[in-house]
Image 1 (cartoon, rainbow, N blue to C red):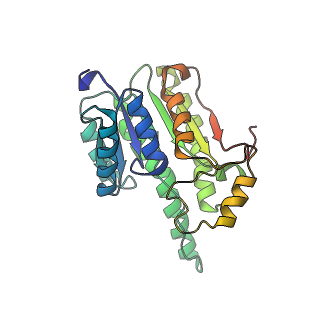
Image 2 (cartoon, rainbow, N blue to C red):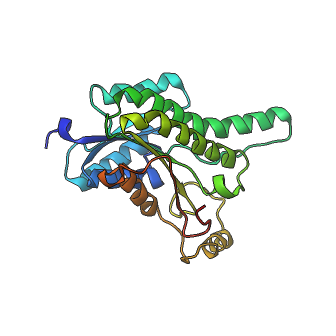
Length: 251
């Protein structure tokens, strides 16, 4: 099948963890994927690995860009070119710590988390709106269980902000039959999220908080994203899908 006839997805934070799992799953579903992130070497390695496993040349193309910088978002638009974008998966972000001894430090800490988790999604999505398939485009935002139960300070607030924006965006794009949804993961092992902060006790405590007695893995989250961007989810929009093993119940 020629490249122009493949569906195209853009996945931010696509070099490792959940983003890489999403990219791999979407390639398996027949998408071409642009993986976007700040670390060009990590993206390139992920692209090579996923493409090699797909048996389809150029299935994954890396695009290095800091999505908090409006000028760098143009690199993604340029990589899309004249193609139609079928799905935008906003996975970039994470918990950013820092000193908070002064009001200036508190402001910097909050701005860093809001930029990394909210502004990246806003700028990428806004830049790609003209290219989104009409009808049938999909926008997915990756949130966190922290948005629903707290515990992350500015990270919790930033992820919760995505929920409100998703509702607005779903209303804006609904007449074009473009869906907008949020996937809200719980504890997911095998990612870079915790860095060296995770302890065996912390892992055990998070597993014990689930109803299914295990940690999530990136493929659990990727499966939810694959559903939402697929043909079966055309009547699902403006929703927050918790994928957390029951550690926070739906409401």
